[in-house]
Structure formats: C-alpha cells, structure tokens
Length: 300
Image (cartoon, rainbow, N blue to C red; front, side, top):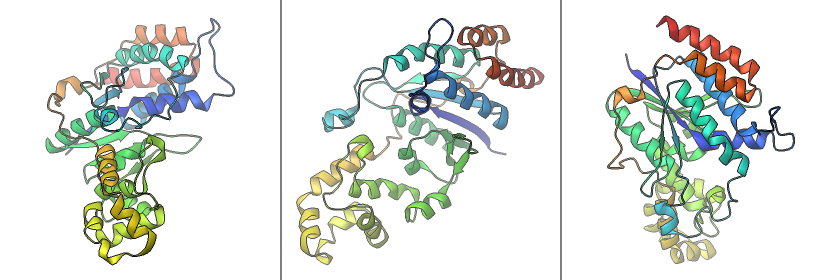
C-alpha cells in the first residue's frame, strides 16, 4: 500500500486567511491580529483530523526576493504589494503551531521558490512510492499532477475539500495531460504572477493551439499554418513565449533538497504546548478540534 505525503504550500493559505477577514479583522483581547492565522490553523487541523496523515511538511517562500525568476524577468510579480504587516507578524505564530503539532517546515532558499521546493520533494517522494497531496490554493501546481501527485484544495467558504487529479485537469483546461498547463499558460500568460505570455493569444486561442500542436515549441514550428495579426504576433514574440515557459515551469530537481522520510513523519504533539499557543491566540473552538487530533495521535 502506498504511503501518503501531504505538502502544505503555506503562503497562499495564509494570504487567503488574511483577506477573508480584510473588512472585519480578528483581534485578540491584547490587540493581536489573528486573521492571517485562523484559517490556516483551521485548514491544518481539519486535514489532520480528516486525513490522519503520517507524513507532512509545510514550505514557506524566502523572506528575501531572491528567486531566479526575478533575475530572468524583473517584472515577475512586480505588481504585488509589500507583505502586509499583519502577515509578517503572524508567521512566527504559525511556525509555533507547526512545531507544536510536530510538523516539519522549510523555507525556500538559494534563488528558488516554495513551488520549486514542493515540486522537488513531491517528485522524489513519488519515485519512492508515495502518493503526494499538495495542499494549496495556487493553480501553478496543476502542472505537477500525475497518477501519484494530486492537488488538494482545502475546504473554503463552506465547500468541502477537493482533490484534483489528471482527469479533472484534462476536463477543466482541455489539455491531454496536466504537464501541458505550462504550455497553455506560456501562450496566454498569467496576470497573477505578471507573466506576459504571447501578445494577442488569449485563453480561447491558447486552448485551440494546445489541442492542435501540444506545446509552445510545436506552435512556433507551425506558424506557417497561421495567418494575419496572430501569426505576426507569435513569430515576433518567440523569446517572450520561451521566457514565459521558463517562469511558469516549476523546478523539480533542486540539487540540495532531499526527501528523508523521518524528517517528514508527524510525531505525537505536545498538548500543553497546544493549549498554551491556542490560549494566547484565543482559539477556543479550534482547541476542541485540536484535542480530537491529540487523542487520536495518543492512541498510535
């Protein structure tokens, strides 16, 4: 039986939690803004209670803007605002919660992003026979989906969690395999990360080209099939298309990252530490859910 590994993409969940309460932020009696923490903690505990994982890790982006993508294209994510102070303040508390639940965590380093670290761990774990679930709200991870790597979208706004595999991505995006997501977005661009794509090629044309040619390289080799303005735009912007593909592609072979099973194994949490941090954050209802997990883990 395949073992399961859950990898948490931290920042999208933290940002989602923060913006979910942007018009009505949550504060403790001492004035700490817990908005960026509460949904992340809810997702974490719900996953622990529902899935009962034995292996899990959380990955954070580096605090410094050191991504190789930024060096390749200085407009990459340039439109994004500075990290809100409430999120920066929340990170140490989230780290404490992860430590309390005995869940490993990592920071992206040496010019890579959390996506690349997760992608590398996922591929190594898959090779070692694990089924990997990437817990995220980031659609970039769709490109990594295989028979043994899934995207796990946590419960949100009253909806149940979703697990996306190959068939779900093929159906939603009209591709033959999730790896073609890279080519699809290389053509149409990705405004969320400020990735340009090919001028004049929107979602409709990009989907048509993927169905017909299969990749951006084969599209460039087949421009004789095209005509008019779109033909000129594509031929003129090959460099932009290749750049977009490089920016979008998640690195899955970071040399200094490895998957050591024992580092990812979840051990029995410390109940006194849970009570202390949850008491400080005034997470009374979540404490009850945390106790359910603690009782389960104590019986293992």
